[in-house]
Structure formats: C-alpha cells, structure tokens
Image (cartoon, rainbow, N blue to C red):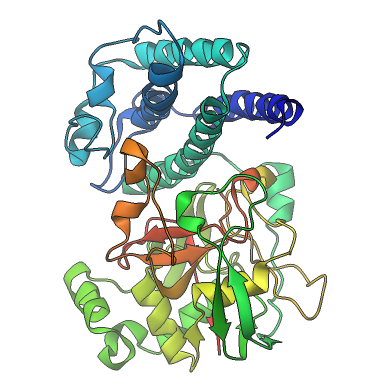
Length: 427
C-alpha cells in the first residue's frame, strides 16, 4: 500500500469510526438505564454490556498494542467485559451479565469517551497500517453489536409483560409499512457451473470470508422473494408444527422440548395472530405480506420441505448475489421491521437479497479451503465457532448497510430464533 493510499484509508476509517460510535449511542437514546440492564435469556446481553464490550475491543486489541503509554481506564475492565477470547483473559459467564449493576452507566459512558479520545489521538499520529486495519476491524465488530443490541432489546421488551415499544411508528415509517398482497411466488433460474466464492479482495472482510475459491454448482433456482408471514401462517394452519415427518430429528426434538407452535414473537390472541416488533405489537393481517422472521434453521427447513422445495446452499446464494448493489431494507432505512418485497428492478434477479431478514442456508458453517484465522487472540473471532452452526446470508432490517456484502457469512446454531432470520426457497 502506497503512503497516499494509506492516508486515504486512514481518513476513511477514522470517519467511519466516529459515525459508528455515535450510532451505537443513538440506538440507546430511547432506553432507560433500567432497560439497559436487562438480559432476558442466556444468549442475549444487556445494552449496557454492549456499550462496554465494544469499547473493550478497541482498548484491548488496538490501544494496548499500538498506543505507547496508553493507560487503562479501569484495570478490571479487560477481564470484566471480555466476551469469549480465552487466550486474552478470563471472563465472567455470559448468563451473569445482567448482574453487572456496577460499573454504572455513567462510568461506562466515560469509558467509551476515554477510548474514543485515545483512538482519535492514535489515528492522528500516522499509525502503522496494522493499527488502521485493527480499527477497521473494531468498527465492523461494533456494527455487529449494533444489530445484536437491537435484537436483544426486542427480546427483552417481548419478555416484559407490559410489552414496551422501542420506537413508535412515525408518519414516514407507518406509510412505508402499508401492505398490499405479495406477488405470487416465482423462481429465478441460474445456470450453475464453476463459480468463485469468497471475498474478492476489495475492501474489508472477516477472516471467514477467505480464501476465495472455486465451487461447482448444478443449475438451480431461487425464489424471487422471501417467504411471507401469510405463507408461513398456512404452514401452521396445515399442522406444520404437529407433523414430525416434516422435521429433521433434532428439529422435532426442539419443537417438543420448547413447545414451538409459531415463530418467536407470534402471539395467538383469541384466534388472531399478532407479531411483536421493535415498533410494538402488530396484527398479522397488517404484516401478512412481510417476510416471516425470527424462525430457526429447523423451522426454515421444515417449511421448505412442506412447500416441496429446499433451502439454498450458501454458495448458490452468493453466486446469485455477487455483483448486485447492497440495497434494501437495512438499518439505515429506519424501518426496524421487515418490509414487503418491492417489484424487482430486474426480472431475472431475486429481490430482498440484502436486508429484511437474514436467510438461512443449507450450509454448515465451516472454513473455506485455505482458511487461516487471524493471528493471536483475534483468531478466536470466527474460527473456533466452525462447529454445530449454520450459515445465514444477506443481512436484515437491523444490519448497517455499510456492514454487509455478498460474501458476508453470518452463523448461528440451528435452534436460534431471536435473530432477524427468515426463509428463501430454492429448487
């Protein structure tokens, strides 16, 4: 990288750092300090913890290594706000994060300001390229936590018997959420063949998007849009959750053990379904043409089998999405709720590949040929989770637009439902 290019990248990363840090705080503006303490399930985290952990990342992996004379804000924070980096420091069990009444929110905000000021000084001091790359990684890490923060708030508010609303609808978001009947489902055909998969080297990527490699795809087709709430309601009405022949063995176990009878956040109100969203409860009739969301991989797979189709592999999904603009109902739209698919700009291409809901794929989360995790503790970021997880693609209505790309690989355990995860059929 030339000196001029390095300065340009440094300036861009510094600007994105500032914008990302501001957005995280903005996402918390409607929350009370009490809201920010709630951890409603072992897989979620309190909003206050997200604020602290994202500062911890910059302090632990950038400032401590690249800022001469940097002084820790608090000597306990390196272990207290560590998430899962075992080679870095010990850490409290995840399900105990709601017990962190101390440090208080004011101290966490001072911690963030302390880290922000130090990162600004570092970026003004002609840092080495590796330091800039680490800041860019930290920004992308924080964008992941912005999405997690919103998914965790939704779960916390749903478990509250008062069902508080994170953000009421405005005139603009209400108009944008007006629903018409969804287009009939049709399929877009792809020829298959030898395709290159993985990040193409332009801009930032995570280590799990590498190395770029070739795969062979048989001819296939993808639905032009995601499965809607009304279509999934038909699956429920047809006994989908009572028919073991539709389910993988572990999926049927999950249905029985958890008492699943509908997606997460669906409530049966005297025979009428309502859905709980970041905009509050909504009748199913109003969101009938919106994508079904908060379903597990097991539910997505069972629905596909019921519909006589299947889920796409992550390679089929990426081959269809590569080269397409990252445009759709992402966090930047301000909707905060999956929206009805718009008419396609190109008849030969699917819609909704970016935004609305993450799409479960049929692919297990594994390393690509030649995968090499980052050196040191950062190698724990992605690689150690390549076991028992399934890949999701495309982002959601709470994913920052600058964060997503066609090669991006999200991953969760197949029973996960609290994420904004939905379904696209393939054949």
